[in-house]
Image 1 (cartoon, helix red, strand yellow):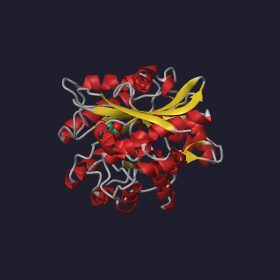
Image 2 (cartoon, protein in one colour; image 1 turned 180 degrees about the vertical axis):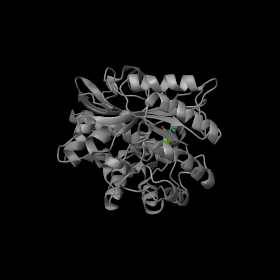
Image 3 (spheres, rainbow, N blue to C red; image 1 turned 90 degrees about the horizontal axis):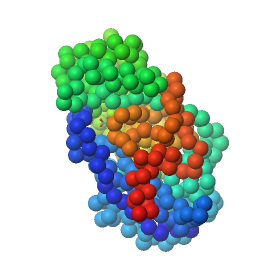
Image 4 (cartoon, helix red, strand yellow; image 1 turned 60 degrees about the vertical axis):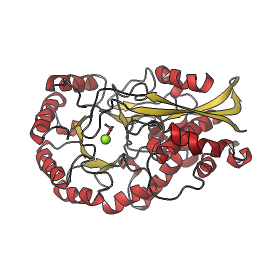
Length: 389
Ligand SMILES: O=C([O-])CC(=O)C(=O)O
Ligand SMILES: [Mg+2]
């Protein structure tokens, strides 16, 4: 058993939307195909992966060093003899040969994307949905049969007025979501409050609305927003300040008793540990949003989950960023609290399997081997062109 080829390409996920920090007019992502010599249903098994929005495609890093480390390795060294399968942990270690610690970012995206494709291949070789494989191997066979999801959107874009924002949020509720998320921080506070109030008219209750500042605020602004947001009793207040400014987050916690969320831009278990050590995050109410696709993949994610457990955090406090099927599998298989969903943006990479409905804000997973990409036809078309083309 061996990996015979790894292919990558960069695809556009550009759109006119903006959050408080960036617009997505030039956004790209990497797609990876790990081609193996294992045959299932008459065809070679190919594992697929992609990186979630917000960081750009990582083809250069992959081509410059990561892919060759795998293709040049002794194939025997990448095999999990116990399960007669590829070994994602050995592959991860090989990918990270001669990489110094620290400085996570970009490289963590390249590795996270390859790791996703490896796990997809492993689950396909084992003939199981990935979430089932994860539950069987790591959670005594107990998987969640559905995952809580919320609808993320509410972006700024040219010509978007409050009525359009309300229409967008109404359409999420119509599609079965209970909680929606909108962007804040690209407009002055008073204008954001007007936008929030207009969304509350649609969703009815602050507990059904989360807001995301994308790391835009300095400490004073973060606290000013906290004071203004408090009366609305929102679902969460996300990424108020710079993702690595743990002191800011800890100070914010002193001014804001309601749930906070952050972590989508922390890319290693060491960064996650620093957040929990120093960021004032409260394990009884706050949420962490680490995204495996951006943070060295599932091999590293398991380390992050271990860090959380060691520090007294339930895995149910994790609701990953990224709205992709990989995190959905991790959520169901390793018992996270839910997953982000982008019903309308970042297509075809955002969203879940075709024909799977959101019911009372929960989704089920398709019963096919792997991550489930083959059950999302628009996404699979892009992947297949790379893997089989
Ligand atoms: O706008 C973005 O960069 C995405 C984001 O923060 C989220 O989904 O929470
Ligand atoms: Mg966010």
